[in-house]
Image (tube, rainbow, N blue to C red; front, side, top):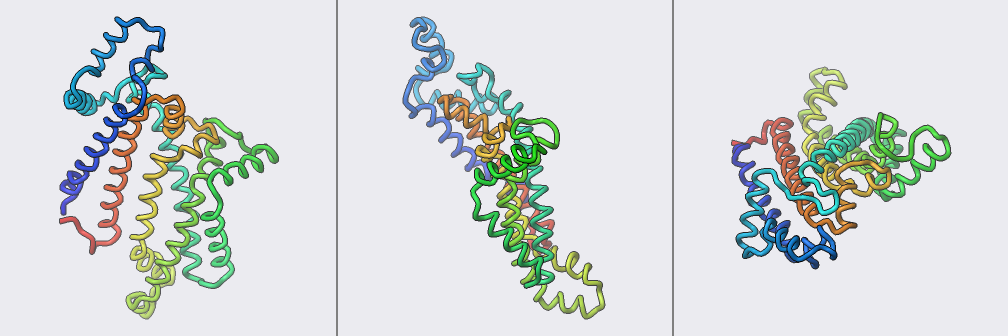
Length: 304
């Protein structure tokens, strides 16, 4: 299957999300117009807004207007900010991307390195330390890690600011909090995949040819162990770009997750609706890129 054809196969998924997001606004209790103007608005204003939003049209016609607006990049207007939702998302998403990339860079660097060293010398001190870090990373909840980091580095040592956004100092604790579980999973996944690959016949052949151990491990071993590692990286990156609500809220990070949480708390249904659509698109794109990376890592996987 070619990449273009594989990309087109995501259209039914996105269309299903589009239907679910549209129905969210129609099945949720309350009147959207009343939420916008309040209970003191006069009947003429309410009637005018209902006509502008096509709320008096039949449901299929409403859906048609909604789909046409989405295709034009119009996700509606927020009840709370009174601004186009697409503009709000465009302002918030870069901060989420910044946090997600920092977390995944930290996770990939630490997790893969720990996994590689553990696989090269299984049962050694580094291996035991790496597995301990993995168990800790998987076991501790995200909010507990966040509060512990704030207590140590912001309150006790006063090295880092406890919340907000700005330079690198503001990014370190949220990135470590978000990437902790990925460090654990990547270390365990890399170790497991490398141990399996290093026991293969072609690795013994490479060593028999007199190749340096570094070349055997990195060029021959690690590349063949990349598929499960890429899977973890792809899934976690998609999750970070669409679901880092808890971390952004604890650290006051002005990203997409915090925007969605505020919309849920204030019942801003158009903002929730637009955010669901946008996050679904991001997740589909990340998964598509992950599939393409499979073919680059392993030539045996081809889309043709």
